[in-house]
Length: 355
Image (tube, rainbow, N blue to C red; front, side, top):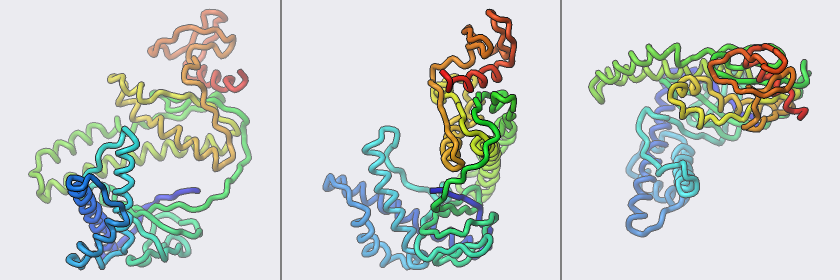
């Protein structure tokens, strides 16, 4: 399966319809959560998504006619999401108790049924009609879509069956060392600069956040300031994602075997002096993208052992020595070999597969 997410080019009428769908989904979710809490307090049992939907039709839809102005899929899926949220809370420790949704925060809804991709960048959606996208869509059958709002823009996402597409590889094996100063250093000498998206926008984000704090809560001016702040955050995330996508696509398309380190990102983030810079790189996202793109392009991803000393080994003679973080050049005390610290680590990662 392959997924796609792209921005919608909608007019005012379509924006209103999308907002109504998101509002109904949010209302159904909050009603379901309140019902579950009250039911559990009285009976010590939690109703299922199916029973909640039956009660929603009987108790809520009858007194709220605006439910019938949107697709029935939006509230149905909201109740399924609520059931999954409770299951995650009960089975996975990191998930907390489900929270009530607020307007303007992660607005989204689900649609299924008569969905059809038309020629080019148009898609036909139930109850909404034909909507235009900014990208050309693949001409594939679509069973369901999720539409979400982010920084005052609407996005559509869906999954479809995808055949693997093996590409001609320019190089068999490559080692990749990721870092803060240089996002990725490859064993063939190629380097990818770190755009440091958050660092570039940090002053602007601070200024916009200060403006939000000074506005009266609930006022229109505060809502405008929040939108401006959200747009800057979105730009930071998009810039980081674009850099990682270009890097991971190049690696997966042009190399048959890619070796990377198994970084302990959560442990690295505990270093408060470097936490902001590490989070700005997106190391976990780099590994996640590379994992599924290697499947797309028929490449092999090898993850070196977490305790493999790639930065301490000499790539020329194999001698191991301590390498503090401030030393950016590797100087071997055994053979005198000198190389850039990151390049030396990348070559060691390339040699890891032969050990």
